[in-house]
Length: 294
Image 1: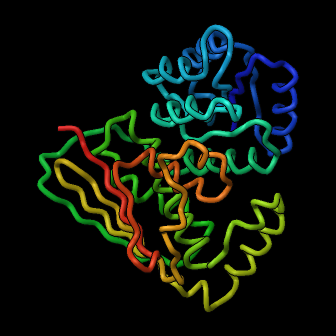
Image 2: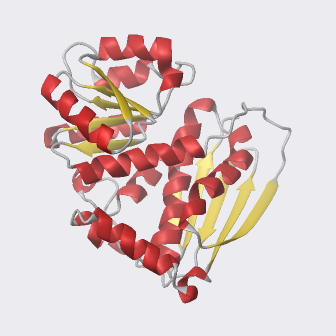
């Protein structure tokens, strides 16, 4: 995957380039939003991710995000921001930025962002919107618990959802779906928390994930997905067979400071992508709804 990195700080661009190289990702650096916009207008299809600073002289990251919405083959955009730019971060997420990094950030945060972008590219079906004279459609899946199958699961669900979605909504819904399925598999059925990742022990997290995937009692649990599409909304229900959790402990989505928390990050991204998300009492069933244009 190739990443376009945009910042007016040349030293940071060089550091990011080295870090991305260590993550087996190519990169191209731009020192301004104007330079990045020209590159994307000419070569957007070459990239799997754009990572841009939100605050720059001239064309800001927010303005770059707005101007790129109609670019053909536009890749997902993630933003970098400082603690003082949280309100701008929220604006970017509302403009369908796929993710964000708060400066200063480490390699583990960059690695997770690259993994998210790769998952999005692997689950992107290749057909355009073609609205049917639909009254109602229901589609359901029952799946084994396999971490390596998450991109394929998302791609399969998106083949059902995509014809109903406007082009500029697809990546954000795809991201919400990826996060929800990942949470159901990793945190739900395999019962693995985020403590190791939050402490920066990415290798320990991956090792524990493999150990749990190999546990017959955990891998025997199923993942259940039900999709309902109506003319005015789509609904996705994802249920795991894990122990559940208390959804009341999640951060308040209206609190900008919640964006700085390590845990619950995927849930925050889901809230920006979907119109409504809710869990059952046990906390092992998530319902996401998205209103559709007339």
